[in-house]
Image 1 (tube, helix red, strand yellow):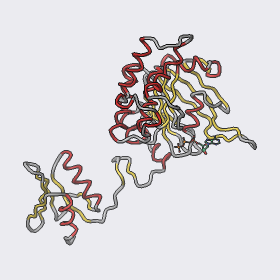
Image 2 (cartoon, helix red, strand yellow; image 1 turned 30 degrees about the vertical axis):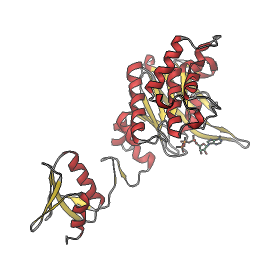
Image 3 (tube, protein in one colour; image 1 turned 45 degrees about the vertical axis):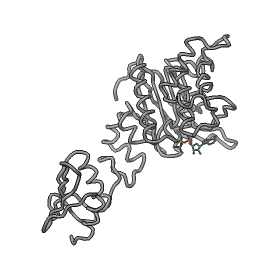
Image 4 (tube, protein in one colour; image 1 turned 90 degrees about the vertical axis):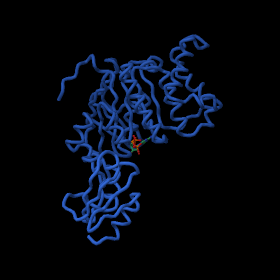
Amino acid sequence: MTEVDNNDIALAIKDLAVGYHTKKKDLVVLENINLYLRHGELVCFMGPNGVGKSTLLRTIAGVQKPLAGEIKIEDVDLSAISIAELSTKMSLVLTDGINAGNMTGRELVGLGRYPYLGWRVDFSEDDLHKIEESITLAQVSSYADKKVHELSDGQLQKMMIARALCQDTPIMILDEPTAHLDLNNRVAIINLLKDLTRKTGKSILIATHELDLALQSADRLWLAGHHVPVISGFPEDMVLNGAIDSVFELKGFDLKTGQLKKKSLGKKVSLQGSGYQYLWTKNALERNGYEISSESDFQIRIMASKNLSWEVENKGIVATNTLEELINYLNQQKF
Ligand SMILES: Nc1ncnc2c1ncn2[C@@H]1O[C@H](COP(=O)(O)OP(=O)(O)OP(=O)(O)O)[C@@H](O)[C@H]1O
C-alpha cells in the first residue's frame, strides 16, 4: 500500500458506514469504507446498480448523516463545518430533478455564487465574470437565456455542471454527470473535468457507469461491489488484477480487449491491412462470427489506395466495395 502524504489529501474517509435509518433498524448500504481523494485528482466511483454510490456521495457532501465513522475535509471533520462554509469547499451535482421555477439557465448558474455574496445583494464584477466563464467552460452559452424548464435533460445536466463550476470549490462531486448526454458531450464533460483537475488543482469525484471513459481518463477508481469493501486504485491495475471483472461480474464484455465478446462460428479468415480500416474490418468480421487467423484458405486484403475496397483471395480473387458485400460473399462460401 502506498504511503499517503497528508498535504496531498483533500478528503479523507475513515471507517465510514453509510445508509438509511428505517423504522425497524438501520439499513447499512456500505461499511468499513476507508478512502482518500487527493488534490488535483479525478476519481471515478464505479459499481453495479444499487450498490450505494449515490448514498456515499450524498454522505460525503453532508446531505445525509453517516451511520458511523468520519469524513474529513482538509483535515477538518465534516460535522464541524457549517453549511455556509461547506458550500465554499465542495460543490455537488446530483441526478435528482431540480425545481428551478421560472429561472433562466444563466440565473441557475448564478446560484453558484451565493456562498460568496455574504451581505451583498448584487453580483460583483468578479461574480459576473465567473458566471460567464462557467457558461463558456461548460459550453452552454447557446441556451443560457432559456428558461430552465425549457431545457432538454442533457442541456439541464450541463447547466448544473456550469453552476457547480461557478461555485468554484476545491472539491467537486458529481453523480452520473454524463447521464442523458450524447457521445460528444460525454467526452467533452469528462475532458473538461479532467482539465480542471490539471489546471486548477481541484479534486473531482464522479459516480459513473461509463467504464470506457473512466478507464481512459480517471486518475484513480473507487470500486464498490456487493458485500465487499470499497477499494481504490489505478484503473489499469484494476483491469489487470481482475478487480473490475469481479465487482461487475462481467458477462459478454472482454476487458482485456475492451470489446464485447463475440461468438466465433469457427470460420477462419486471414486479414491484411492496417490502421482504423483494419480495426473496423476486423469488427465486421468478428461481429459476424468470423475468426481472424493466419491459417485460413480465405485471405482478405484491404485495398486502401484510392477507393476503399476489399479483395478476397480463395481459388480466385473477388473484390467488394463495402463490408456488407464482403460479409455477404463470405456467408455464401463453404468453410
Ligand atoms: N431514501 C432511501 N431510503 C432507504 N433506502 C434507500 C434510499 N435511497 C436508496 N436506498 C437504497 O440504498 C441502496 C443504494 O442505493 P444508491 O442509490 O446509493 O445506489 P447506486 O449505487 O447509486 O445505484 P445506481 O447505480 O442504480 O444509481 C439501494 O438498495 C437503495 O434501494
